[in-house]
View (cartoon, rainbow, N blue to C red):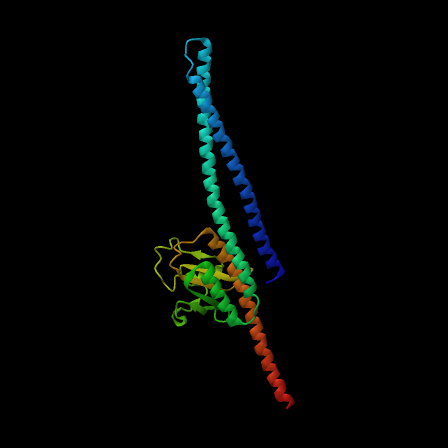
Length: 274
């Protein structure tokens, strides 16, 4: 992984940690405000109880009853504020859980990226990508497809849960897969639960690209049983994974090509020197 990518992932992780810290401080502030309001209600109820036993026969008593009405209004306002604070607490708790899940997934992807970039063996890179897709994305049936720039055809080089021979070759710009490879834009079905498997129309199609250059696509046809929908964090994971996967695949292919060329050149040199 390059220094720029390393810093980018570090930066996102640090950003989420800062969100956690601010979130914790905000939670404590809300709890203190909630406690203060509840204590104020107790005080108001005690004041009201003390005033209710006074007979309403003098001007002083009328003032006291007016005061009771004011305290009642203040009590209602405080109760409304408590409900608002409690709603904010619930919203924040839900957001906190979502961010915590996202942070954990990003941390896992950060660790996996080290493994992904630790080898220049093409087959090992594909195997590592496969494991990441299963463990982090929760995909059960999917394929990694690469673009042959000579024929402008996209072909599967690795797959999981599907026979590789069954996955169609797709021309650049044709169908969902070809369009994603051409435009570099992500594709997701609108409703995961109603999706019917079609090898020409995947549930998810993510371009594998280096900057704006697409070298292939990741297609997903089925999620694991426990995963019925995509969370917001999944979309970001797809984007990050696609970038890391594309870089690792491109580097390993260049390395393997150079190794073959060196081997061929060395063979010619050996023939000439014998």
